[in-house]
Length: 102
Image (cartoon, rainbow, N blue to C red; front, side, top):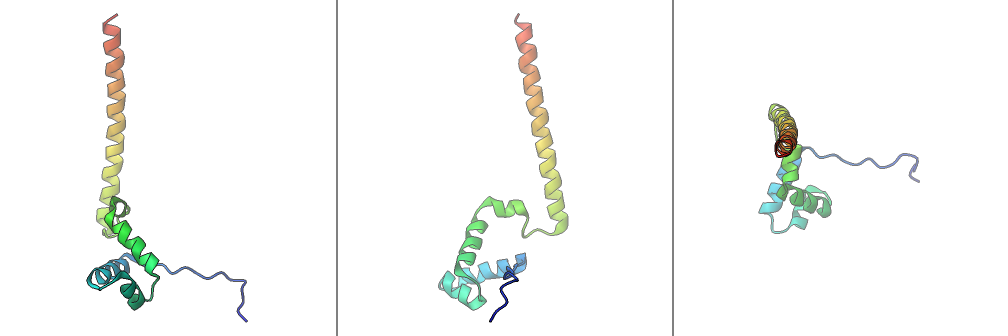
């Protein structure tokens, strides 16, 4: 009898395995056949395919080297800060232009 006190651990797949699985699924006659060949659930492979088509995968930086991912994070932080500064300046312009007309 199995000891049910320990839950089954989920397998984690690195970006290289995912990329290879997606390549194999693309070359294979079906995603299900590729999933069987890789001994993974077909639903998981479908999920990876869907994620690869969305910009969210790029946002996570799954296929980026650490230096590029760090640069991407810095650029996004800079973009957010500049957007905030622009919003503040737009509000200031609206306030000063309203007081000039009075």
